[in-house]
Length: 520
Image (cartoon, rainbow, N blue to C red; front, side, top):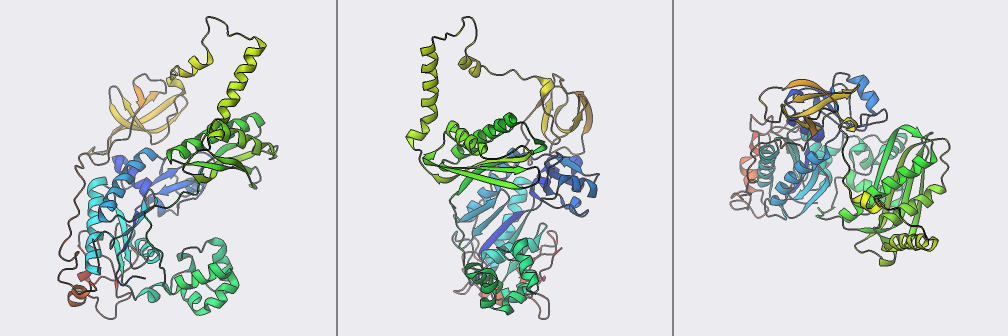
């Protein structure tokens, strides 16, 4: 545990939905739900306007539609989200070399390692400046938590939502955690939470009072001891800049159960190819192939096969996944398929890498021995593969939320499609007012898909990180606390006296404001 709140946790606010609202002026201030739009789709992100109706992440999309029927339902645009995430991560990288990304919109930062902050005042200023820079560069808001440990920094950022900052002074951990539910602690999921509830433990204070021996008896030595330490506010996990990837996988949930064995095999092959693409993009190869099958009755089967050595050859992965599928009964129907690769390495076993090529060569020799010849005047399979496919406009998929452009009306986005028509709203992120809506035939030659537009028109170079006198520790005590003790502090008697957040951006709260931490 650190003596100063120099671990920062950033969590972008309703990231996917907020990015969609920022790029579409007609959706600002309205409920927006991003996720899979099929019958079995789930909510990825819901805007704060939609959350008022009870919509939450991971909720079935059908349930979300019942709760909030008038919301805008959009499919994710990961290309846009990755671009914004890269901008945010670059800003974090300017604060410290120790940045631990958890997802596209969430990360830990060690401010002390970057020399940005060694005390509370400097950490607060760094957090506020980060929030300002993120809004200037991306147009979006993020919530920041500052504490002496990763666990408390994450709890603080959750308390800060939306668009706020919460700082937890070391030494106040127990009083802050005591009334919180046990699910707030890392490693306590639904099953563990229910197990603890049956034992009469519903708050963090209950865990601390139960003692380590009782938790070890209930949960086992490792989990019980770890949970007791966290309930007491102790968390010494460091911020790790790079974490080893343990596996790479892809999976698809189908709108209608698959029964045709040939179709199932085709889908497994397609998933294997996608998995290898991700594997190669990460610079890895793997030796264990994993197949996941969820059947019609929600029972999930997992099969795996370990090869002689690591590979990143799509033919080898497809073949192994096919063998695994042969051992699974799919007669009742399949609702989900997944293919993964684990046991990762940074190199490829050459004999495995060449295995598929050797098999194809053997097939070619067999054809020659049979004396089969390719007919003249017809395109060979290799030439056919190299020929660029001609897109049929009538076969395009116009997904709600995706970017399009029209030869006459310019850029816009798909509001919906069906019965041979597609409805488009023509507007850009910088449009002063919502754009007009027009409907076209799905095969309109003037309409085509386009790349996402930037949310901020002229972001310019990213802001420079300048260390102030307070941030370098000058004018402060050796422990970096003198300035806070002399000119800050919260009036006695207020709840959570050392955890502060500004009332709003316009009011300019800070360490000297004395505002108590509270959930908006």
